Each structure stands twice: as structure tokens, then as C-alpha cells.
Length: 304
Image 1 (cartoon, rainbow, N blue to C red):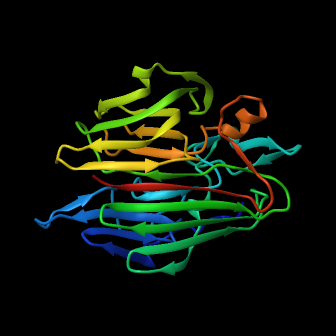
Image 2 (tube, helix red, strand yellow; image 1 turned 180 degrees about the horizontal axis):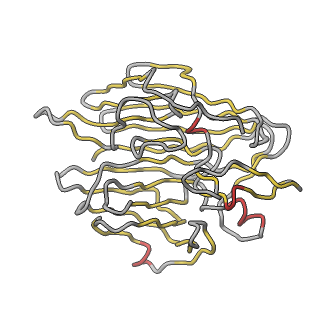
């Protein structure tokens, strides 16, 4: 896989505005939404996402801020390899997750802005074969309104053969201990010490409803049968809302030790889905795109 730039910087920052809502986008820095907030009547900035700091950073050690695309897969690929179409695909392991690959690679590469307006922006990443041997095109269309940001994200197989695929978005919500997270998902995926999914199990109606305050404990949960809505009721009285639908029927809920932020990641598959599917494990969420086929979905991030 061709190397990403040694450093990326906050060049080409695009500012979006609609009423009191504001967002910034750093397309060249991995297609990232760098910040999303509302200016309230008292002049207070109410952030939805942890805002990215200005300046350069190593794209392999990305900032825990903003929101980035998960293309062409989400989360881990065990040992950075998987079988597909009669061959083994070997990928570069991620430095922080070695020996595994993690979170695709589109968010380590520059995206190109193809259209921009006062409250909208479109950006695109075109992949040519390298260690990932399939050509594809990924597109994000962003639209800001009075209550939040809608991300329309899609990936199209441009190769002449089928391509394995996953998709998602990875927001870092501005939240902390005491803030209350709510969402519903019918299945839980067990995971091993490598952070890879192993088996799904059904949850009772009560257990499927996550409704708990954040604390300083680290959490990484993989769920399926996601209800498509999540919220974070914050101590300052604001409420973050995430809304989505098919194909994002999986969700990753992650909070680091210390509770500095909360990630609620709508995705199409569980961690290590490509290897699970190759072993015949059902429900992993892995997709296979035929030549010219597109996988697409909508995710909305905002304030209630």
C-alpha cells in the first residue's frame, strides 16, 4: 500500500454555516469533519464533536477528535490479512494496533473537494490498487442545517472483480463522566484480547437498551441490530443526537480510560468481519460489491 504523507496539516480548511450551526472540514486530512458546533444566543460555543486542533499531525496516529470516514472497512482485520477470491490479501499493520490493520486507510489519504457551498460540501477519494488490490471511489456529501450535519457516504467498486467492503463513520463526541448515553441494539458481539469479534449473542429486551452515565472506565462494545438512534445527554443541558439507518446496522461504542470523549460509530460490520465471513460465521456484516456496485448510507450528527 502506498505510503501516506509523513505529515498532514490544516490546509484547505472549509468552513460551513447554517443559522447558528457551524462546521469545519479538512478534506486533505483524510476527509475529516474537523469540528461541529452551535453558537448559542449567549455567545457560548456548544460543541458536538471534540474539535481538532490546528496544525500538522501524523496520519498514522490521528487525533482523537472530529469525525472521519471508515473506508473500505471498519475496525480491525486480524493480523492485517484475510482470504478472498482464492488469494490472501496482506495489508500493512497499523502501528498502534500491530499486528492488525485498523479502520481502513481512506482517512490517512487526501480527499479532493468536488463541490462546496455555504452549508454544503462534497469530497472524493479515488483509490488505485496497491496492497488493497481493488480500485474504488469513495464520496462524502456533507449538508449542514439548523440542528446538525448530515453525512451521505458511499463507496463504489471500480475494479473488474468483486471487492470486499465495509463502511462507517467515526465521530469523537464531546462528552465526559456523568453524561448519559442511550441507544438500542439487539445483539452483542463477543471479542477476544485482540479486539476482534468472535461470536454474536442475542440480548434480552432490557439488555439491548444501553442507558448509562459515562465514567472513567474504558469501554469498547460491538453491537448489531442497531436501532439507528443514539443520544448523549450532557451535564450542560445539551443533548447530542446521532441518527442513521441501513446499511449501518452495527455500532461500536468506545470510551477511553478517563472518559475524555465518547465514540458511537455506525458501521456496516463487526471487527474482523472479513475473516469471520471467510470462516462461515454468520452475521458479520461483510459486504461484497460487484464491479460497479455501490454501498451507501446516511449519518446525521447534531443537537436536539
